[in-house]
Image (tube, rainbow, N blue to C red; front, side):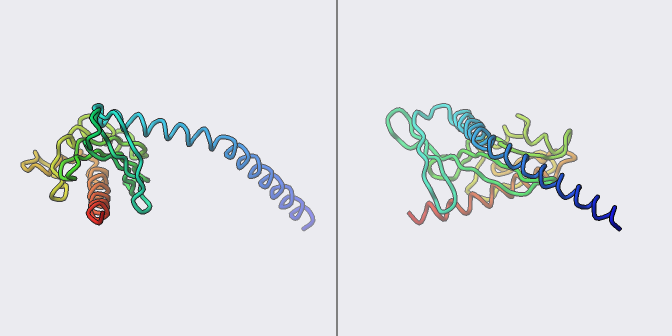
Length: 184
């Protein structure tokens, strides 16, 4: 009995020390992690909208929308972050749309932990390219065969769940943002 209490005490002490050091290291690295995430996001914005000369950040409820302006100061579109559940974890998508919010200009997958070799194909250019100039006045749809409508994309074979997740995440966020933008 005495030995059991000693073992439990030692293990508890080791766990407390490890937890302290892990939280200390995380606190030191947090600023750098956030800086790297912001850098990745800014680079993705300019990949999605290379003609944007000025980007301004606007709060819309809990969301942040980036307004894109050309060199004349005219609004050329919006970029927003959409996040939701994929097959294995959260998927973060940066999407660019035109000023009328009826055509998607493109997407970038910012973060994803989908299955390597299958679901991670959502990060590939072939999949992302399908969202270039995609009509979003109707909900985006995914199909298993060749798309025959302007609002459809082809799902990745063997990763339909990941493809569906991307489509659902985008449709949900587009509907939310459309409502907020129309309020103004």
